[in-house]
Length: 168
Image 1 (cartoon, one colour):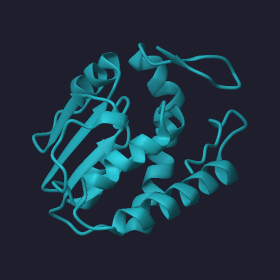
Image 2 (cartoon, one colour; image 1 turned 180 degrees about the vertical axis):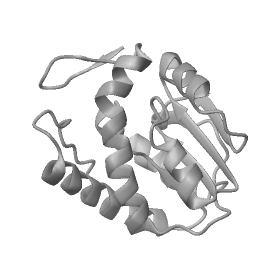
Image 3 (cartoon, rainbow, N blue to C red; image 1 turned 90 degrees about the horizontal axis):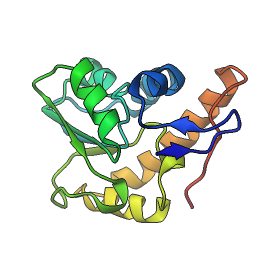
Image 4 (cartoon, rainbow, N blue to C red; image 1 turned 45 degrees about the vertical axis):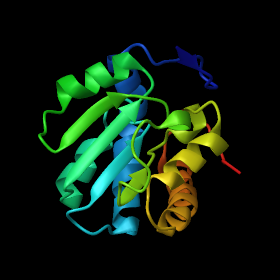
């Protein structure tokens, strides 16, 4: 599977190459996003479009979660994440954000670090993510957090920044 990018196709079937391209962005923007979000510890997290798992350790190390379920539609990305992040509170799964196979209202926090621009149907993905949290705080986090993350990415990133995307 490949995705469009101004510098050529992004390969999702090569975890090492994808990590070199997107991993640094996920960590840099993710750190700022978590500072802004200031989530409560002992929460149950759902991470949509985790890719190689670059954002997942930030959540694990900084947020003291009870558990993290992270998923991505590409088996090679999940294999890379499972191999590189060994943490008993994290479970990686192959799944698409447009059809999340986990129970509604079963997570405290749902995040998607720099993955919305790779999703085939953003509106369906957002509907699915919203359904997984029992409250509506996620609406504010998703909109504000994504905008702030995109602003930080463009203000501080090198010339080969991934393209920005808005899900409206």
